Image (tube, rainbow over all chains, first blue to last red; front, side, top):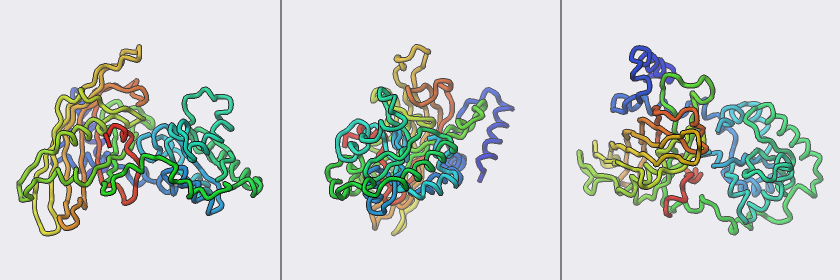
Amino acid sequence: MLTRPSFLACLATLALTQPALAQDAPRLTERTYAQLRDYVLPDKEEERWRNVDWKSSYWDAVVEAQKAKKPILLWAMNGHPLGHT
Amino acid sequence: MKGRQAVWSQPEIQALAARFVAAADEVWRLHNLKDPECELFQEFMDKGIYGDRTDSSTRQGIFAVAPSGVLLADVNTTQPGPMRDMLTRALRAWDALPKSERFLPYDPEARRAEIQRGEQRFPSDGVAMRVHVRDLPRAGQPADWRAKALNLDYAWFRRGELRSVLPVRVAKRATRAWPAALVQRVVRLHLTDYVRGQTTPHEAGSVHAASLQTEVLSVKKTKVELRFTGKAQVNTEPWTDRPDGSRARGIDVALLGRASWDPRSVRFTEFELVAAGQRWGRTEYNFRQDDVGPAPLGWVFTLAPQGERVPPAALGAYGW
């Protein structure tokens, strides 16, 4: 399996040797399927933000904080911060 | 979205966050609607960074509050330094806050039934999927966070909808076209360009071609292996709100996927669907003003972990 950097290197080589193809999407085929899938999916480093034990609603945090006698940290964004933001 | 890597992945910030009950939530609803959850948010939202900006259309930010709704500190940043400072100030303010002011005078669990949220629309037999999206490699990517930008949405399915993508007679090499309405939903609401930020669904009339087909690869008593193939071609009317020559937006992508179906439990035990191809154009908030393409983009649908219930951004367009 190609890692993200090596996949990128292959594409960069392609871009250098065939400039006309530089903006062409890698074609999705049975052969490229796993490479493209793994390139898009987050790696371990990119999933570290999930180490924070996020509740997905403010009220869930209010309920738990009231019981646990702790303050609340609320990350509030346009679009759900745990999803499409 | 930048904050996921730049702030919340930092061990020092995570250690501070562990001293709170942490929540992430969509702010428009909290800012504008009326129920106990929204009203509690509205009690403190203008007492900090928005105090002199109450005409702002948003209340995005990171707020540290007591369960009672007393604001401890707030900030709106994607930098770890200001976040560390805010969390430290908040913990000091919490320690200084009299116990009599820390908590609600009622049990908040008792008011949950008054709160209306998207998560409540998750079907009792539903299946949630994560949909990751990222730019695919190309020459000329900017040398900053945009080069590796990654975003995430959720797609929800009723179990019957997923059953409908299986051939009526499950046998090797049997095929079935996915129902048109389901393909339209996947393409219009989920194959959108939100790599760098929020976007809107493709308009219904902009889908010029969309198909998905299932083929049975193998059949065993406990496992049916499937392959999905398809394509989608979308071109939306030009974005006319902006004077900068913004172009129409669209996609031209192939779809390919694999799944395992367990006939005994009547559910997918594995599911992947990859879409990859070209995207072009932009929308108001997706930060493509300097990068309207055409350029390569990829999406991956995978089963979400059990219990993950973040609603799809376009849930309102599901018609549920």
